[in-house]
Length: 120
Image (cartoon, rainbow, N blue to C red; front, side):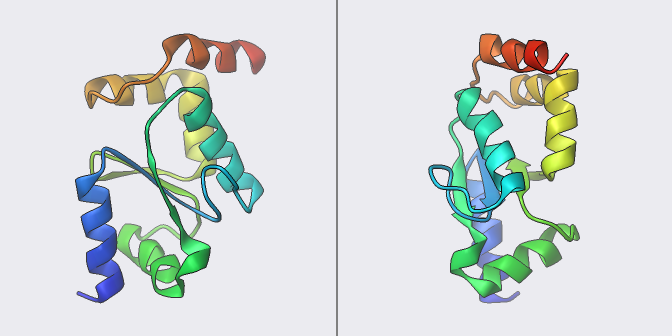
Protein backbone atom coordinates (compact mmCIF):
# COMPACT_ATOMS: atom_id res chain seq x y z
CA UNK A 1 0.00 0.00 0.00
CA UNK A 2 1.22 3.47 -0.77
CA UNK A 3 1.41 6.19 1.85
CA UNK A 4 -1.58 7.93 0.22
CA UNK A 5 -3.63 4.73 0.29
CA UNK A 6 -2.77 4.15 3.94
CA UNK A 7 -3.67 7.75 4.79
CA UNK A 8 -6.98 7.50 2.90
CA UNK A 9 -7.91 4.21 4.57
CA UNK A 10 -7.06 5.60 8.01
CA UNK A 11 -9.15 8.71 7.33
CA UNK A 12 -12.26 6.91 6.08
CA UNK A 13 -12.17 4.28 8.83
CA UNK A 14 -11.50 6.64 11.75
CA UNK A 15 -14.20 9.23 10.88
CA UNK A 16 -17.95 8.63 10.54
CA UNK A 17 -18.40 10.94 7.55
CA UNK A 18 -15.60 12.03 5.20
CA UNK A 19 -15.80 14.20 2.10
CA UNK A 20 -12.84 14.18 -0.26
CA UNK A 21 -13.27 17.47 -2.09
CA UNK A 22 -11.60 20.30 -3.94
CA UNK A 23 -11.12 22.93 -1.27
CA UNK A 24 -12.51 22.79 2.26
CA UNK A 25 -16.00 22.71 3.73
CA UNK A 26 -15.68 26.41 4.56
CA UNK A 27 -14.10 27.32 1.20
CA UNK A 28 -14.96 24.84 -1.56
CA UNK A 29 -13.03 25.36 -4.79
CA UNK A 30 -15.34 23.68 -7.28
CA UNK A 31 -19.09 23.72 -7.84
CA UNK A 32 -19.58 19.99 -7.30
CA UNK A 33 -17.61 19.99 -4.04
CA UNK A 34 -19.52 23.10 -2.97
CA UNK A 35 -22.86 21.41 -3.59
CA UNK A 36 -22.08 18.31 -1.54
CA UNK A 37 -20.43 20.27 1.29
CA UNK A 38 -23.37 22.66 1.23
CA UNK A 39 -25.88 19.83 1.64
CA UNK A 40 -23.91 18.31 4.53
CA UNK A 41 -23.39 21.70 6.21
CA UNK A 42 -27.06 22.65 5.78
CA UNK A 43 -28.16 19.31 7.23
CA UNK A 44 -25.86 19.84 10.20
CA UNK A 45 -23.77 16.73 9.52
CA UNK A 46 -20.41 16.63 11.28
CA UNK A 47 -17.91 15.59 8.64
CA UNK A 48 -14.20 15.54 7.98
CA UNK A 49 -13.15 17.34 4.82
CA UNK A 50 -10.03 16.35 2.88
CA UNK A 51 -8.77 18.91 0.37
CA UNK A 52 -7.43 16.88 -2.55
CA UNK A 53 -5.90 20.01 -4.07
CA UNK A 54 -3.39 20.11 -1.21
CA UNK A 55 -1.85 16.72 -2.06
CA UNK A 56 -1.53 15.17 -5.52
CA UNK A 57 -0.99 11.74 -3.98
CA UNK A 58 -4.34 11.95 -2.19
CA UNK A 59 -6.01 13.46 -5.27
CA UNK A 60 -5.08 10.44 -7.42
CA UNK A 61 -5.08 7.99 -4.52
CA UNK A 62 -8.76 8.54 -3.68
CA UNK A 63 -9.74 7.83 -7.29
CA UNK A 64 -7.79 4.57 -7.17
CA UNK A 65 -9.07 3.70 -3.67
CA UNK A 66 -12.73 3.98 -4.67
CA UNK A 67 -12.33 3.10 -8.35
CA UNK A 68 -14.36 6.26 -8.97
CA UNK A 69 -12.96 8.85 -11.40
CA UNK A 70 -14.34 12.10 -9.99
CA UNK A 71 -14.19 14.28 -6.91
CA UNK A 72 -15.99 14.96 -4.57
CA UNK A 73 -16.36 11.56 -2.93
CA UNK A 74 -18.44 10.94 0.20
CA UNK A 75 -17.75 8.14 2.67
CA UNK A 76 -20.01 7.13 5.55
CA UNK A 77 -18.67 4.71 8.16
CA UNK A 78 -15.82 3.69 5.85
CA UNK A 79 -18.06 2.95 2.86
CA UNK A 80 -17.95 4.90 -0.40
CA UNK A 81 -21.37 6.48 -1.04
CA UNK A 82 -20.84 8.44 -4.24
CA UNK A 83 -20.08 11.73 -5.91
CA UNK A 84 -22.07 14.90 -6.45
CA UNK A 85 -24.84 13.51 -8.68
CA UNK A 86 -25.43 10.47 -6.47
CA UNK A 87 -25.47 12.55 -3.26
CA UNK A 88 -27.88 15.04 -4.87
CA UNK A 89 -30.23 12.22 -5.92
CA UNK A 90 -29.99 10.55 -2.50
CA UNK A 91 -30.73 13.84 -0.75
CA UNK A 92 -33.82 14.51 -2.87
CA UNK A 93 -35.14 10.94 -2.57
CA UNK A 94 -34.57 10.70 1.20
CA UNK A 95 -32.04 7.87 0.78
CA UNK A 96 -29.31 9.99 2.38
CA UNK A 97 -31.49 10.42 5.49
CA UNK A 98 -31.93 6.64 5.65
CA UNK A 99 -28.19 6.05 5.22
CA UNK A 100 -27.41 8.47 8.06
CA UNK A 101 -30.07 6.93 10.31
CA UNK A 102 -28.84 3.37 9.65
CA UNK A 103 -25.29 4.43 10.53
CA UNK A 104 -26.09 6.55 13.58
CA UNK A 105 -24.99 9.81 11.92
CA UNK A 106 -26.73 12.86 13.40
CA UNK A 107 -28.38 15.26 10.95
CA UNK A 108 -31.16 17.85 10.91
CA UNK A 109 -34.30 16.16 9.52
CA UNK A 110 -36.08 19.49 9.11
CA UNK A 111 -33.22 20.83 7.01
CA UNK A 112 -33.32 17.70 4.84
CA UNK A 113 -37.06 18.24 4.30
CA UNK A 114 -36.47 21.89 3.39
CA UNK A 115 -33.97 20.82 0.72
CA UNK A 116 -36.56 18.46 -0.75
CA UNK A 117 -39.32 21.08 -0.59
CA UNK A 118 -37.14 23.66 -2.33
CA UNK A 119 -36.30 21.20 -5.11
CA UNK A 120 -39.65 19.42 -5.38
